[in-house]
Image 1 (cartoon, rainbow, N blue to C red):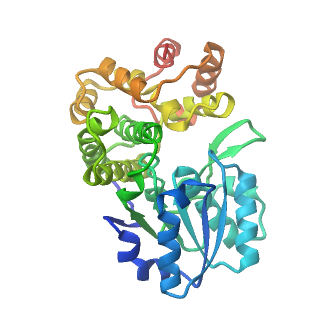
Image 2 (image 1 turned 90 degrees about the horizontal axis):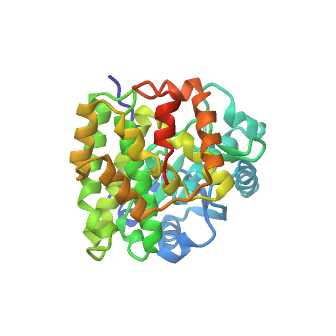
Image 3 (image 1 turned 135 degrees about the horizontal axis):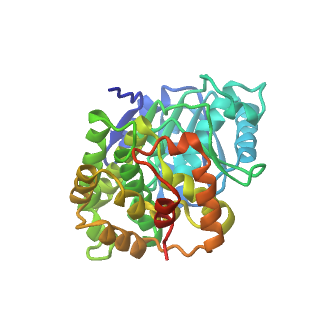
Length: 358
């Protein structure tokens, strides 16, 4: 067994101000990598800037990260950081800005390389990196992976160069005014990470520790997701905790079949990532070993995979053309490395069942 989690994670209210000295100890000039609107709207950007200003740390803001960021965007962020003389990076937002921040931190440290370097085998150095998540889905603050859009290939692809954030500041208050649709879709993403880490050839006692802790946190938040209860500060923090624990889980195991199936749906049909990966979870879990399947369902609070699928569909419905689903399935079946991550044999019949999302 193994467990590697080098990121120092703080999960609490006002954690940026509480741990501002540690954040600012990363360097003297921060490149802040974020999206166009949300971090400004939810207050996270102001909180980071206040912390930097308090400790007399300079900063440059790059707010050009799109949903599902491309390698080209990473290079624009890299160039802006280099021209400003930044010596560390802060990613603020959902998985897109944090993934872009990771890649930018790598490329700034390796400034003589093109973006292709991200997809070369081997270890790498990067600038110091901090992550401030503002959605409850990707858990990117607790993983080393950057998933980037490759327009040259017409899909999304995980970079082979990896870097964990040095520090993650996880504050549920940034969820309090988030649109309900965003909460639902990103929470489905977190659940998907937990399921795919549980049903995985690399799953072990250590990864299951974070998986089942995450599932319990996620299950406690279901009333906030289905509209039964209005989101509370405690509920928001638990949603964040579930997402971070899910990130810690996939940092040990990686994702599996549903994630691979999702990428064409996102790239070609514009299906949000969380909805796209969620669409295949019930079918994927259905064929897992009975003891693992039942343990996951019980921890998440579902009677069976049919109820799980219905709940996910109610939060994040997906409509995809059959031809696109079949192309996704064909590509995944041909991907021997990704198929090897699944702990049971998937043939064409089982794959057809997994992609049958109606």
